[in-house]
Structure formats: structure tokens, C-alpha cells
Length: 280
Image 1: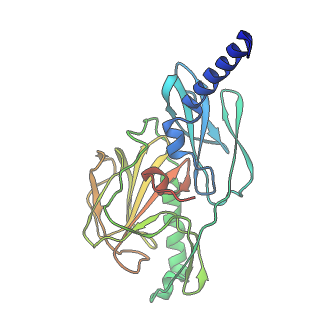
Image 2: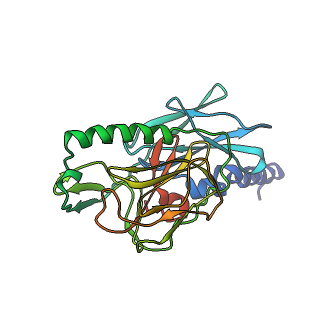
Image 3: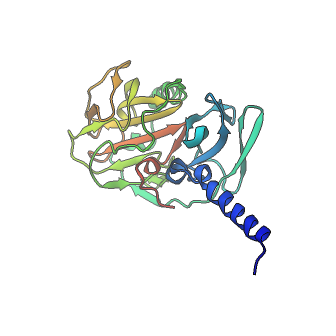
């Protein structure tokens, strides 16, 4: 029979193992930790009385409080990061590691009648460059507000027509991967903000058409485009579920649909992660 000491050690080990998942496998980690290109890494920063700051690749990242006064860094990983690479989040003089896993994205071939939307002319390219600069600045917004919710609502109720990360070929020519989710819904369908936020940019752009950026806080940003109508203005506070515009087909689009981007620390990531629809 095992000795009292052996039983005591075994009991202590079980208690320690039971305690570990309280933060190592928290609800937030189970929901969001998908550390692949285009995914999200959840990095445990440990307990602290006040919110610590954290950075990755020189950019500030979203930090939220988990249970037991522990803090978590929610890091967006760009599609351009190579699988298998070791990364480090910096916080309080420490370097906290995570590894980027692998994910293969499918291909999509699209035929456009407007050849300029495949190969823009010089005037178009000048416009596109100016518009890109404005939108990149919006994506890099980092306000101190804590997001109202990390489990997001779908902006519209409808089936997916195109997933995130798809390698896209327009008229046979490869272009940037799909940076968001497309929902197949009729023109005029109201688009609702998936979390509370502030409108930081609106515009009509060459590729995106009518577009709205909503800052949910700490670099957590939603972008909606191809809209038929914009119902908000810059500076508006939008509640969770508040209508920001209507579905349309403006910009480079083959028909009415709702395109939704999610960005973390200036990295476009798979919105499916935040609506519990991620597929490895």
C-alpha cells in the first residue's frame, strides 16, 4: 500500500494540476488562442494590481483582465508571419514566448467585368495609395478603452460567402489574400457593430467602396465596407448592436454582401475567431 507521504504528494500534485487550468486554459484562452498566421495568440502576463503594458514587434497589444487578477495579452498575428516561428511578447522587462502554428488557406477565383479593378490605371494607383495611407493610420489607432466584449456579435445574420485568408485570383491574377469575412445578405440589410466603439474613419474608397472603421479599444478595430449607405459619422459613439450602415456592392464587389475586417495591433485577423466559428 502507498505510504502516507506518497499519498500526500500525489494529492498535492493533483491539486496543483487542477489549479493550473484556471488561468492557462481560461475561457478567453479557449475562445481566442488560435496562434496561426491570421490568428490570435493569448499570452499570460501573470497577476498584477494594475493593468500591465505589453508590446509585440514594437506595437502595443490589447491587454485584458482574466480571473484571479491575472492579465492576458491578446495578440493579432498577420498572415505574413511564417508558421513555426517563435515569437515574444514584451511586458514589464520580460519576454514571454509563443509559437506560430500552421494553417493552410484555400483559393478563390473571381471574374470582374471592370478590368481597372484588377489592373488600375496610374490615376487609380495614386488614389489607392492615398486611401491606403489613411486606412493604415486608422488601423494603427490605439485608444486606452477596454473593449466591451471579446466574444463578438455577427454584424449581420446570414451565411458566409467567403472566408478569411483565402488566396484570391481576379481574372486569373493573384492579389492580396482576403482580409475579412463576407456574408451573403441582401442589399440594404442593416450592419450592426459587434461591440461598443467609436467611429474613427468613414470614406468611399476605390477597392472598399463605402467604408466605416469602429475602434473597440486598445487596437481592437472593426472595418465594414462595400456599403450602400453609411449611417454614422466620425466621432460617433456606437453601442453594441448599433447600426453603422447598410449592405451594398460599392467598390470592388461582384454583388451585394457584407465584408467585415477585424484588426488587432494593426494585424488583420480572422473574425471567425471572435464569433466562435474558427476552423483550424
